[in-house]
Image (cartoon, rainbow, N blue to C red):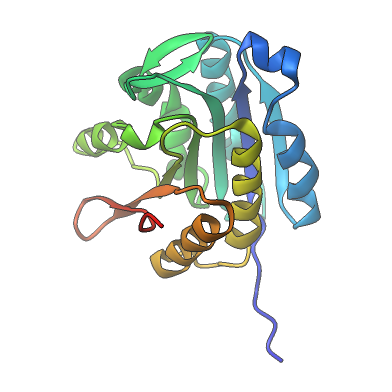
Length: 221
């Protein structure tokens, strides 16, 4: 039997729970930190409580390409767990910020292709994140010389912390078994998650030939 090659993924997880979440103990971090190493991935997780702390975390991650690393072709994921605006107009880090502000804060990660050859992926685990305009802004910025992300993954509508953690755990387990991260494999992963957990995840994949992001999500059951 032929053994399918698996890939190691580096996950930089930034979580911004609300005050009540801290009292309730609801978070994605404990699950992801426990499971990711068991399925062969590397993970660093930190909690932030403000937009400034999130911006500082992105700036810190942006230095990853400054160090010699023979394994630097590993996919690198910036996984963001936070509350979304009720209007779908942005995300919350202690206070609501717009998608435009989020893109500015993400710049150290978005421009990593100059020093880090691995694929760059952003995950937005937040209510109504599928209504994002991040990819539209990144496409516009591409004309200014900025290199876009390879993939953006989002949840949609209202998603509880617990079920989101289960969905993303399955996501990383299956993603590690798709070494090429090609669109057919990723679509298959999102279909399986939808069938298993009931959460519909969306992706936006950069297409060099068309010069734009291609959107896809599983059909509603």
